Length: 239
Image 1: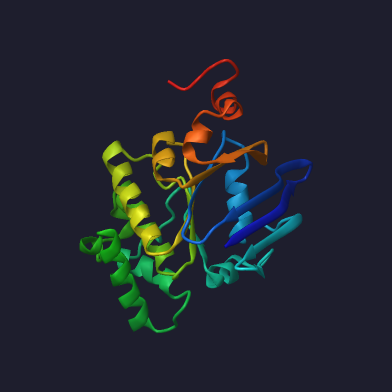
Image 2: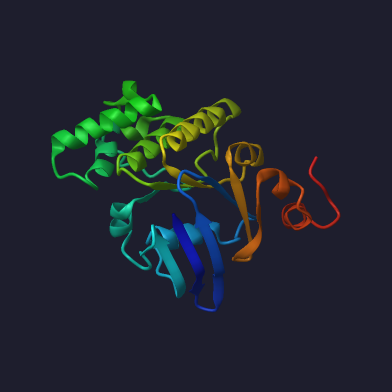
């Protein structure tokens, strides 16, 4: 499991993450929601090694991975995607995914085989030789999922993987994420599309002002007064 224990991250006088505690169980889909500026992506960056934490511990399967480099954390089994797709634009789709595979192999042949397998899982094998910068937004996101998958992760952190997609594309991504989870990979998903996060998550954690606001199953979170107030304002309710 991933354990986040009393993690705090400061930027000068701003406390972006304040004594957060999270447990992500094996093969769980955990939704992470909250208003803009709640600290969700900062928490991701701490878990994935992009930011150093100021206080607290982060553990993976009981191993302390606090403040390891992002490369070391990826090798230990935590991969991630970003809010905005970050392809290597002049490389082909296959070559982009091979970058992820080199996390665990130095052999080009093995990296190619891993890329081909990941493309088959995500349904983008027909794009293998296309230049990544020419892809649609949805296909770029699928390629990024492939690149994370190619690292052979135990867990993947998804930062707004469905942002900017139309309803049909959102459903395609939901189906794909469930497929990954059914293979044994734990998922932590930041998302602002409430219908999507409510339908896919086993459990949801809500952040506000860098701290834990609420935690529970989707039905509990959808009716939680503090969550409704945080998103819509006091005295309002979801339609």
